[in-house]
Length: 407
Image (cartoon, rainbow, N blue to C red):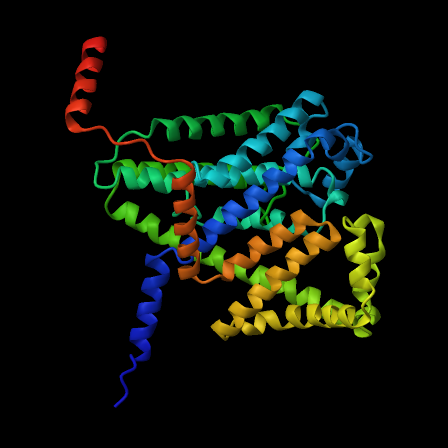
């Protein structure tokens, strides 16, 4: 007699899991931390060159960028004004929001604000980007859909501390929400009227202004439900948030598969990849040779170049199909991460490699990520030992002193 569940029961269980749980909480946390950290380090490294890359001293002038965005309708706050002070403010805004998103402080708000920073800089000078910038660009959009602050974040830490307590007034959240609304209203009133960000946006018929206002209203609705409707209204919002999160996670996974499948199949069509000599040429370019001796030594072995060229194509083409087998997928995932480490070392593309490694991490198994998080926590405790807890008598004495001073 078969012990398997009927189809209806399995379908019901699947629906309950998708609506009742935010799947891949650790994986989305890795995406949030990793890509925000990559973007933050890139911005800090390029701080001395920021004016030439995205600012008024760049070869891609403000007027040229304005004409391009008027045609492709890309969003960038840098084109609201051509002033130097506005550029500095937007660049600093991108740095701060990336850091706060990596820490997981007010994650729902920071995913939106960090996306604004990413799009504002990257769409200002579109010809500066590479594959890593494209990954950060896409993931910044997708992270808005996810509940990526459920673990390994300051939000999760704050939620754990107040567990079991009645919900109080979240003054910081209210102030942040109000400031975002005022800033968005000021942008619409004072921004460059020649820009079409109110008419075109991420969805057909929805402008960027409308999308940002919708996100702002949803954040307010969430706070109202948490404050005044902790029962059924909050449960309904949780179900919708879980559905959106799981859909966003699926999109991220599909995007990673599409990146590798597209790259692999395009390589197959190239004659240099077909004869196994494709990697020989970039290893002899000075621009892509941070370690010339190592690159030339590797390029000097025809067999090794052949194996690496064919292996790269095989791994990229095969990866989407390995998702059907967990063990093969995990092995190939490790190979791909090592491949990106090799790209960072041999070709001098650290940010591209780091972005791709982080994107690959969405397929890492949850037990491995939990062990990794526990190891990171132990390392943190050794480096930053916690302060000893006060004994009750000492705590009561401190409170008495505080009451005396205040009263």
